[in-house]
Image 1 (cartoon, one colour):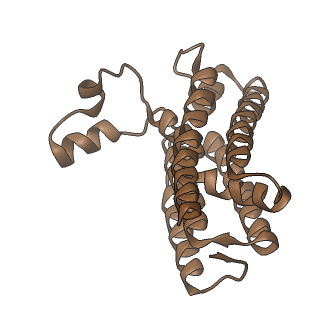
Image 2 (cartoon, one colour):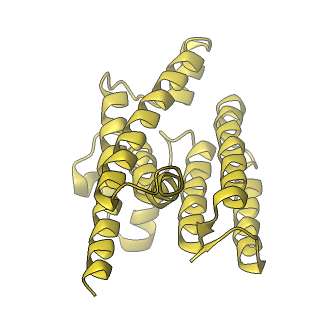
Length: 212
């Protein structure tokens, strides 16, 4: 069910987001890059609030959007490239995640990009549902996947334009490329795959409902 009025459950979720943002703002690894990333957080939060009031969102879509922001805020604190997830896995479960998976770079940025497709798909789907009510769910699926792909590309352009105005060290901290010349291409790919996974699940649910 889509809602357009904030209730106590929404404010609780907002409270969690604010708490995490405040904690993440304590001694980030590099303040300039952290600030640049958090500008994006504020802009995305403004878009969420505006769209919620105008078109309405299900609580699940709202929570998934906030979950993406939480993942992004954690990455911003550690500059994406230095999120110590392998240390955490070693401490909690006794194994090094990077070594177990054979990764030679910090993969947290890939998590953020695939989460963009996975978790924001329902939000984008709702927008296209309002903008193009006459089209089928299958057509809407492909529109959302293409939208995720296109916005991921635009984000990489913006990231590049910001990075060329920074020092080499600041650019690497902000960009998190880690020496991979294909980093942007891979980020766009995993975001697209993420949107297709969630989209396929939602499409299956729609088809199942139609058969009842």
